Length: 97
Image (cartoon, rainbow, N blue to C red; front, side, top):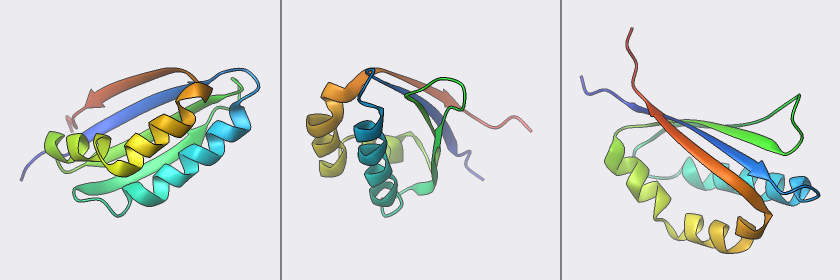
């Protein structure tokens, strides 16, 4: 059985842009769930740090993640929401147990 790819993406909003970014990120969730290789795609918001959002994602493989990152939806998101984002950190994991 092939190992799934787990991704944890942290997105930090510019101060004052938290609400706009939240709405744009929520739109991504509905698109991601229709993409090939999608397994799980959950959005969380920090209780301690205003404007910090975390995606917990599971994809069938690296190719599925690459396809996701290059969809028209992701490109449109970048064009619209890029101005609201202070930083993005993407970390990839594999299950060990």
